[in-house]
Image 1 (cartoon, rainbow, N blue to C red):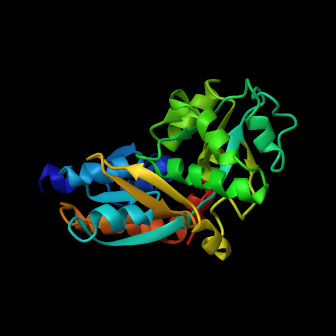
Image 2 (image 1 turned 90 degrees about the vertical axis):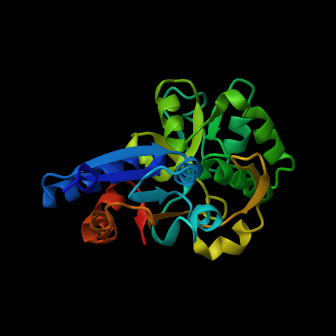
Length: 273
C-alpha cells in the first residue's frame, strides 16, 4: 500500500479545528497505522485551495453555500450538512465595560470611543459575512438607524482577521475587547460570550425569511464581486472527486455524523443535525 493510501488529508474551516482533531483520533484508534494530515483556513480559502488543485480527501466548511457556488459539480459531487451554530459576542474579564454589557446594550457599548472589536474577513471566511449580516439585522431589531454603518466603520482593517479562530486568539492575547465569532469557537477557547437574540444570530430556521433580507457583497479570488444572502448557519462536509482515500474518508464521515461524532460536536458547542 502506498503512502497516499496510508494518509488521509483533511482541509477544514478553522472553527472546526477541535472537533475534527477529536474525530481524527477516533478514526486512528479503529484504523491503526494510518496518518491524518490536518490543515485549516477560512472556508472560502479552503475551497480556493481545492480549486487550485490541492489534493485533499475531505473538505469541511462553515457554509454549504460555498460548495454550491465553487465546488459542485466539478470538484465535489455531494456534500452533507452536519451541524449548526450561532454568532455570539465573545469577551473576557479584561474587556472594557465587560461587567455591564448584555444582549440589549451591546450596540451602545461597542460604539464607545475606546472599545475595540473584531470580525473575520468576509472575503475569506463565512463568519465574516455572517457578522455583517448580524449587524444589518441588529440595526432593525434594536431600531438604531445607522448602526450597521457605525459598526462597519469602527471595525477597521486592523481588527479584521482571516478566520474566526484567529479572533479567539486575538481576544485571549488582549488585542481586542470583543469579537463576533461562533458560539462553538467561544466555548472551545473558554471565552465568556453574549448570546444574541435568535432573530439576529442566524441560528433559527424559523427566522430564515428574516435572515434572507440581509445581503453582503464579497470579492472572490479573481477580484469579481458577488452577493451572499443571509441564511441559518450550517456546517457541511464532502469528499472531493480527486480523493485518493475514499474508503478512509467515508469512515471519517461515518464517525462525524454518527453517535460518537454527535457527542463530540455537542461537547465543542455545535448542534448536530
